[in-house]
Length: 377
Image (cartoon, rainbow, N blue to C red; front, side, top):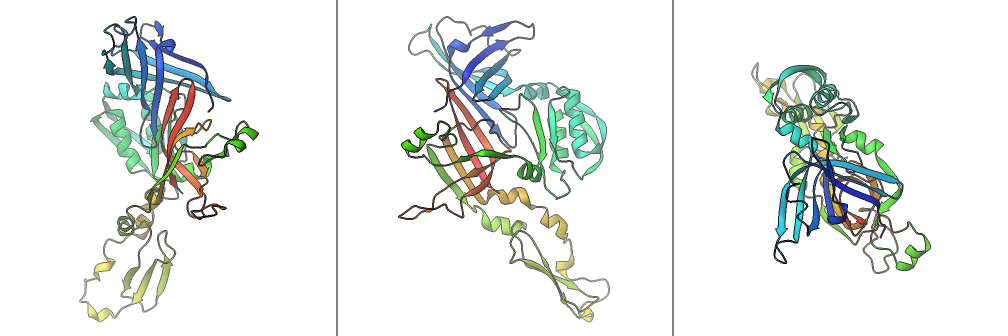
């Protein structure tokens, strides 16, 4: 297991004073998701009552450390304590301090009532600059969607979610907005297609435990090795996705004006198609159309899909030797052996590039491990 260096944890107030609690900390857990901001907990033991007055609504807590060549630094809103254990002694308390993104605290205290105009991505950046501070968001891929949006006296994040929900890029790929553990508190607004094409982590793979001898030969060979590697789902919800058009359907579209037959590839399944078939126009009176002609927008149907389709194969890697710099939105290789008696090759189905959608970072006794949820591209 690889250890971190220079761990520092301290609590600060708006007045500028700070309290170093590094020596009290026993465990740190930070969660990130491709759909949200950071959150977590810091566990500690306090025998001197240092934290009794330090935990207040105006406090923030900063966690920083170094891991291999990477520096991590994040500031959180200190959102109270839980699991306070007084069983051993009333003077020796075990805390789990709850951490929330500072952006969540700002969002809870603010309402927006104004109008914006421009690309969806540009509007979101404007809201971030105004309410969360300039330089707190980066963008991966421009939106194709644009227009004017009037914010009706709601929180900044609620306004952003409305815009993001309706945004897509030139490849009809939806956008996600989240914070990374190695992002220094900044948020990333990116299309799923941009992440898949630009965020591949090279040099490391997620894999099951290696033989101990192989680890000893190369000092960094254990990076990415997980204690458990489970396939959580394999095309879960397959029928629902077919129904939604993710994997494609066979669509019979009636053309009353000609008798030609046109076949077009449709959806992600190469065996599915849209077909225009000949139909005699006198079967319908004037003004009537076939039912399948109504409300069908093939471009909209095709765009359903990249993000939903990622749910096909989901893998969970737990207690993984931390991959430096790895966070949600990154794409990384996963290696899984074939399920055979000889176990000599890689599984063609499950080995490949995966998008990281959720992570929990654990630091205990200066050892850094990761729990990672991955979806196959």
